[in-house]
Length: 142
Image (cartoon, rainbow, N blue to C red; front, side, top):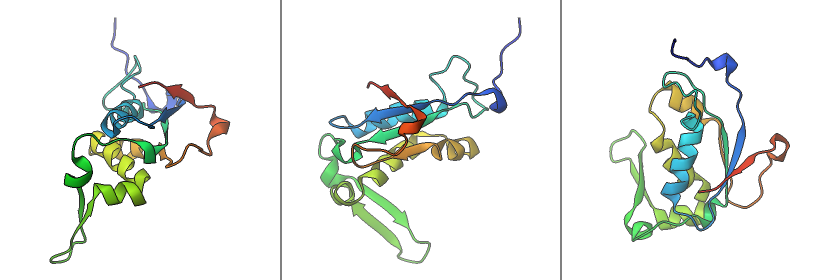
C-alpha cells in the first residue's frame, strides 16, 4: 500500500464563511488558517497547496480579550532610518478591522510560497455582507 500524495491539479476548492461577531480574533484566525492551509482535509499534504477559500464577515465585531486593545500594537518599518510606525489595536480595530483580521491570519500561515498563495484565498469583510454568494459558501461554526 502506497502513501497518497495530493496534487494541485486534482484539488477541488470549496468556499467557507466564518462569522467573527462576538468571537475572539485569535480563534477565528486559527480556524481560517487551518482551512486556508487544508489541514482539515484527509488528503492533506504539507508540501502541496491543498487549501480552500475562506470568507470572514463581521471582522469589526471580533473581540480582543484582556488588555490587548490598549497594550497591543501593529508595527511596521518603512525601511528608512527612524521609520518605525506604530498603531494601537484600539485605533486599528476602529479604522481598519479587516486589516487586523488579515494580519492575525497571515501570521498563522507558513512564511513561504505556499503560505503566500494560501493568503490570496482569504476574503475579509468588516460588515455582515459579502459579494461571494454565487460561490455558495458553507458556514463554519467555531
